[in-house]
Length: 169
Image (cartoon, rainbow, N blue to C red; front, top):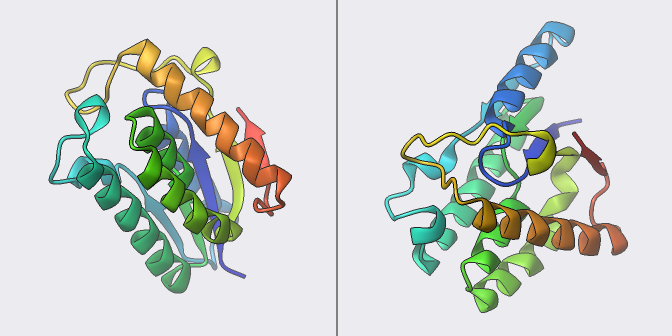
């Protein structure tokens, strides 16, 4: 069975580092399985990201996240990601693009079945946000994104859309 193990949370919580570490562990413990990491997809977005993001930004990140996850599901036994599509939806809402976010959420209800486990890295326990020219360090914005993620995950869990569950780390 093909699986996706994902990390989720606002920027600067150590998701990418954790995803890389988990992928390494998966390869060590499953030597006969193909393991792939999807990380830092937003860094390739041709539009401004974070608080400077637009609807084009969010649509690009959302569609590319889904595309790369679907490709990975068919090519690899285990895929580890440093975000879920819920992350993108939360940023979209936090940026005020509510109509776009609602459309994304409809698709997420279907796509979330592919996540075998989701590890939620909360800001208060994971202080790794450093200015690097990519990530937004504004704590208020990061907290709004995190709160929106929690709200969306609660909704998806209530409707039985997260078969692997969420683990707070």
